[in-house]
Image (cartoon, rainbow, N blue to C red; front, side, top):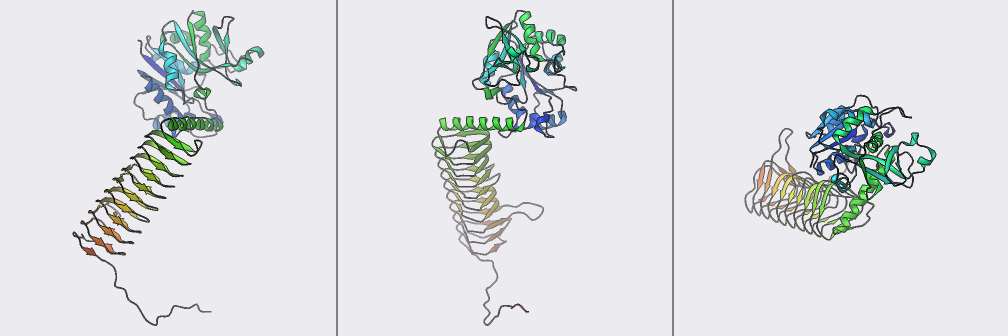
Length: 455
């Protein structure tokens, strides 16, 4: 089969977005729209991906670090036909060419696979959609036998043509050799004064090519974004689709309308997710995981049976089975919790390895630390890991009890089964089974009077 080349049109300014950010860089589900389209093109197995850019070209390139993309600049935006023409020198004659759009981010892979599957030199693949309200779209014109004969843009359409509800999505696929013959022959004699890619449909009919029409399962797949309202509509559709997937795979969602997946989320069975939970990056949930309301989880692995309580933030962490997190806990990158651990309310961890059965119950900071098994860290404990220039590690052995309001000044090691007295500042290593108390001696002063305000 001839190679597939994908051309993504991403040069438009998007003036209706009212933004300094190029339109194709506005995000759906936490990713720029253009990145969604590039990702889909990769899934299709495209031999080469070409992106036509114009407005904000340097910014688009800098945000999109894709070595596999051939960037082509359209210095003047003279229409879709003119945009595709900029890529012609980079297209082999035997290539199948699929044209996509940087502001149409959510077209399913299977929709496009079906469209290009049977494509050959004698066929043009066209993706259309039937809308209740076709206003603003080019209409699909068919003959008495139902064959597509042309596409008419709304501003050029007659009254009868404007009544047609089947409209053009802009997505089409055809042989490169035909594009090279047709695009130079396009005319801009129309209401917009632009070179329309859609005019090649009539050229294909004149050259006796078969027009193979397909449609997506849902119109939202081919909805473009011209303003922030449409962007929000696509976001909600995407999130509803993700919610339905999660429920089908074994998750109970307290409210399917109040969950956001902004990345890749995989789950086990019997998951319970409360409202307003946000997943970002790559997140893996084991079975029987419970997540309370208002949590943010980013790039994390969470094993079976773990409970994450309300308003906890987890990033770059690995959590073992049957752990308890939160409420109001913050697990920063490098946190690695073993099974049956507990990180309680208002606890922050960073680059902390916590052994099986250990507990950091509340109001503590544990960073650059390695804790053994069955360690108990009291409230208000801090590992002082930073001297203003360098970071140092605290090592706590199995069975250590750290009293409340203690400061462990790294580098320091507290060996197995040692005890740290509450309120201590530990600056030297503590041996096995030792009690370390490091605080000023208490003095009780009799007859002391509090200061009084003077008039």
